[in-house]
Length: 158
Image (tube, rainbow, N blue to C red; front, side):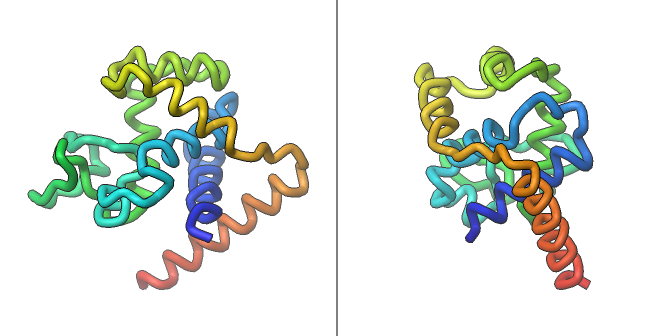
């Protein structure tokens, strides 16, 4: 269930707040999160809500906590929402190519996102494992479910 929630969170944030990513599939971004978190099992994800292996920075979504997680001292977030927003903000800051999934992946790597020479191959392998949502009804349902999840999360915090 957590995988579906994360997929839907990425989908909703991308489509509602980052419209400039309209040519980039949720699938490619989700696949990167799967790769970065070791299929959502890494300590950086579980303890710090860090979906993309982001490092501490000065952007508004970075938690001010002095505690950093992982061997590289990865950023921590109070929510997955903040992690996803930080990722999109990073991609815009580095002017990643938003024309299509393939160019997006290559452009992300050219910005220095990862130092692992096998990163692209691993990301692509995850991308191929993620099913495509081709049916417009399923896509609309995904947005509705995501909106409900976000509403429930906000309601729970108040």
